[in-house]
Image 1 (cartoon, rainbow, N blue to C red):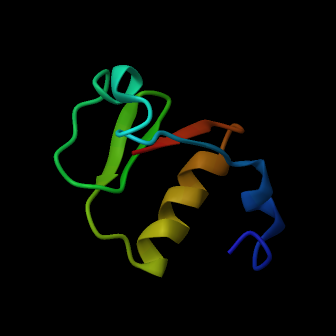
Image 2 (image 1 turned 90 degrees about the horizontal axis):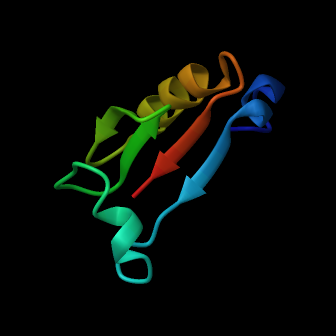
Length: 70
């Protein structure tokens, strides 16, 4: 999707593996994966379609936000 819209290149992601990084994962409130946060606010939890991912990228690219994903 970043190839579809160069503006999405601004969205930076941090992927947190709950098995490898349990101390970090415990800091987030989630039940399902993947779960996406933008600036500490949960924006989606659970199965993510291409359209949902596109919406998350749009939100994250505004203001060059950092996005976390469990």
